[in-house]
Length: 373
Image 1 (cartoon, rainbow, N blue to C red):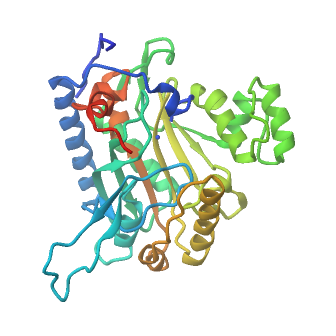
Image 2 (spheres, rainbow, N blue to C red; image 1 turned 90 degrees about the vertical axis):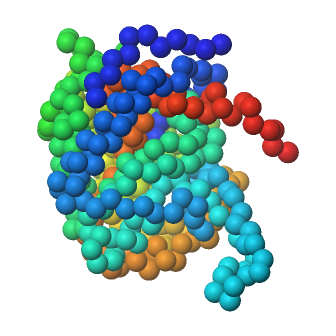
């Protein structure tokens, strides 16, 4: 059955439930009005970034090394060279992955002269993600600046978004009063500790897993038996914190626990937390950014920890990207952010699902594909 979209107004990545529980979603694919809004939004963002000295770049979609994020599954493909193979060619078939983010490649560019401020609008791919706010193939708007930090990137991003629209319609179940969300800077800024204290009634940073479990139960969350500290953090965040963020204006949630930020710099005055932020508005998680970790030795250690976690979760463990690691020490201080372009379009147009802003959403297209063995 297909659901009808009504009342969509055109002005120009995470749901609380696991994506696998939302596979029934079906929606009307994007109209020509939504496509015009998409084009206008892309122009606005490009104009704003170029005015701020950012250079648009393109990086490969098919890459030799997948990211190490424990809960992401990249699509895989194979490059098979046609004979005859030139002396400077590639010998033998090679495994490649469709990137889940252009982050590694863009940080390699940061280390090169002339790319200190760069961005791209790019298609990325994540296997298994299909819900009201997820599509396996989607568009990221990603930008980096060196020198830079989480704070300077947040300032740039809120100015960019306010240049696209000054207010947007409140989403169902969110918003008060006028029924709109203001995009006028400054956006609200809350640390994770402040948000947990305000909306869950406790500060998680000083708690061990046992005490965290008790605190979660006390605020109405029911953790799974044996849940880890990070599992507990994510569950309380999804059930108690995220629904309260970005009501009247967007909210930057900042200073994530260090264990939740493998690619971010730790806060010098409190290494229990990292200089990572996420942006929320109207119940949508829109962006994830941080002060970049530009120490190759520390980054290697963190990626090895993620490799071990992938192994424990039964996921494939990928080799480390040595070109990415070798570039980090040449960057200095930097900041970056990835913005879900499709979700931003949802926010601006009032669309109810990501399928509403895509011409050929996976929920409509994938059922026609041949079944995998």
